[in-house]
Image (cartoon, rainbow, N blue to C red):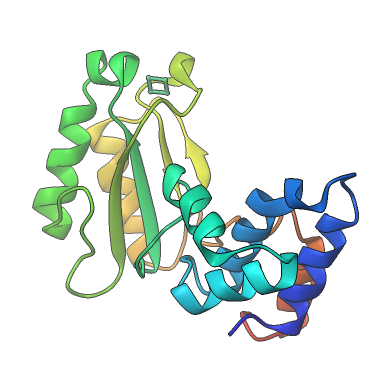
Length: 184
Ligand code: FES
């Protein structure tokens, strides 16, 4: 399931910690990038195998964090913060745009497979409320009008398209993609 490049990236992370288990979150992030933005059970098992952990331990860790997707996501992952600062600044209007434009509610993927919408907790960017992330990229001071424009850009093949998965933890994979690797 996991590519050899992903396995190498995981081993590299493991080598950076006195206790290799500390690399588990990074490893799951790598697996998610390697699998197109989510972590299938087979990939979870591969992570466990690579790290010498029980799959149940990996599962319990992964289930705690919302940044790991447990089901396939659309081409563009739209994450809208719904916590207090963003709520005050009108985050509900952003959800309305997603409903009207894409026909989706939080947790859903549009029928054309283009968009997955998630309602997320504070993105630690309250000063830029409303704050959202598109394919992992911050978009601050978001309004309904700006979101409409952003969706137009994405539909036209522009905007923050490239997922940031892997970049922070596995530059090797990003380099591979740039050279036409399996996930280019
Ligand atoms: S409340 Fe939305 S980023 Fe903090």
